[in-house]
Length: 307
Length: 301
Image 1 (cartoon, helix red, strand yellow):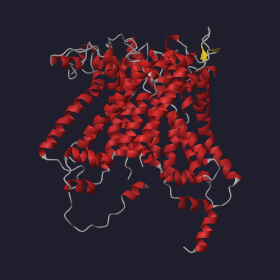
Image 2 (cartoon, helix red, strand yellow; image 1 turned 180 degrees about the horizontal axis):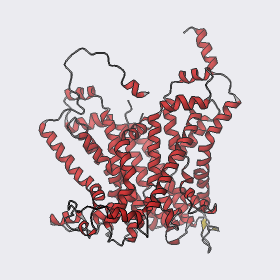
Image 3 (cartoon, chains in turn purple, green; image 1 turned 90 degrees about the horizontal axis):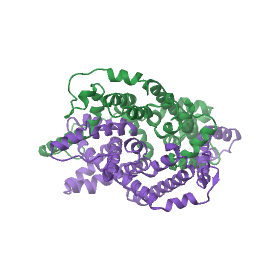
Image 4 (cartoon, one colour; image 1 turned 45 degrees about the horizontal axis):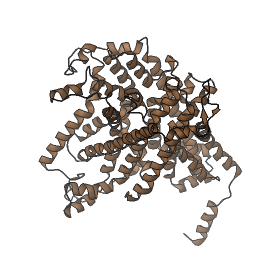
C-alpha cells in the first residue's frame, strides 16, 4: 500500500460524524436502555430510598425510620443469615465445580459411549430450581425415599433431611449442585476438548502423568473455563431462592434462611410487607455480589491462562 | 459462516502414519475400566431423580411409595398426567400457556432489544458508545433480588398486578444479551462493513441481510438462554401473581400442586414436574451445543 493510499484510507475512516447516523444509533439503543432504565437503574435508586422507610399501618412504605433498617443488619440474626448464605455459596461452588470436573476429565477420553454419558449427565440442567426442589423433596421424603431405603439397607438411619438443623442447608445446597452440575460439565468439557494434543504429548514425554499431568498441564489450559464456571456458579448460588422456599421455607428455626430468602420473607411472605428492611438487605446482596466479582476478577483472573 | 471456515478443505496430507487422535491420552485397559465404574456410579446417583420424575408420573400412587421403589412395576398409565392437566385446585393447562407466553415474549424481546443496541454499539459511529456499553454491563452486576421490591411496588402502582404483562414487563431488555451479541458483532470483518456502507447499503438492510445471518450461532444461544430464563422464572411470578391462581406459571403451579397434595399425591406431582420439563429437556438434549458455543464465544475468549 502506497503512503498515499494509506492516507486516503485514514481520511475515509475519519469521516465526520453525521447527525442522522447518531440519531439512528441512539434510537437503536433506546428500547434496551428504556427497559433497563425503568426496571434496573430506577429501582436501584428506589431501593436506596426504600431502605430508610418503615411500613405504616396501611402497609405502604411511607414512614421514615432513618437508619433503623441498617441497624437491624448489625444483629446476630442477620449475621446468621450471612453465614448461611456464605456456607451455601461455598458448598455449591466447590462441589458444583469439582464434581463436574471429575466427570468431564474421564468423559474427554476417547472411549466408546462417552457421548451418551455426556448427554445423560447434562439432563438435570433441564430442571428449574423449583422443579429440582420438588423432585429432591420426594427423593428424601420419609414415606417413599429411595435414599432412605438404601441407607437402611446399609444399616444406617436417615436424618430428617429437610427438618434437622445441620442437614437442611446441606440438602438445599445439594439440590442446587445437582442442577448446576450439568451446565458446568458442558462448559468444562468444551474446554477439555480444546486442549492441544501436542502440548499433552510433550508433557507426557517429559514424564508428567496422572494427577501431576492434570494439575500442571491440563488444569492451567482449561483455566478460562474453570474461571467462567466459578463466576457463574457463585452468582447462581448467591441468588438461589426457589430451592429454599420450596424445600424448607427457611426452616427449621431459620437455619436455611439465606440473604435472598430473607429478602423474600421480609417483603412478601405472610403479609410481612417490611419493604424497608428487605431493600436494605437487597443493597447488602448487591454489595456482596460486587465484592465477590471484584475478588474473582481481580485476584483469580490473574492466574487464568488465556491462549 | 464459521462452519464454512472450520470445514475448509484440508490439503491432501501425505499418507503418513496417522497418529491416533486422543484427548488426554488413551488410557490403559485397567484405567478405562475404572473410568466406566466411576461414570456408571455417578450416573446412578445423578440420574435417578430424572428417572423417578419421568417414570414416577406414570405409576399409580401406591406403587410409587413402595420401598424399594417400584419404578419397574409395569402398571403404567397416563392418569396422573390427565389429572395434572385438569386438576381443579391448580390446573396445569393455563399455567403451561402462561409459561409459554413468558418464555416466548422474553425471548423475542431480548433478541430485538439486544440486536439493535449491540448493532449501534459496534457499527454505528456515534459519541458515548463506550459509556453506553458500560451502562449495559453494569446492569449485569445488579442481582434481580436487590431490586425486586421496588419493581413489585411499581407494577402494583400501575395496576398491572395479576395481568400477563406484569409477568414479563421487567425482563424485556437484558444487559447480558447486549454483551453477547456485541461480542459476536465485533468478530464481523470491519472491511466488509465499510464496503457495504460505501455501496450504499442502509443500516437496517445491512443488519438484516448481512450481519444477522452471520451470527446465527450467537442468536440461537441467546434465544435458547432467554427462553430458559423465562420458562424457569420462579421468584417474580410467585410474588406478582400469587393472588390469582389463573396467573400461575408452571413453576409456581407445580409447587402449589405439591403444597395442596398434602404429601399423598407424589405421582401426580411428578407428572406435573415432567410437564414443566418437556421444552427444557428438548432444549438441553438438542440445543446444548449452541448454548455452550454461544456462551464461550463471548465469555471466555
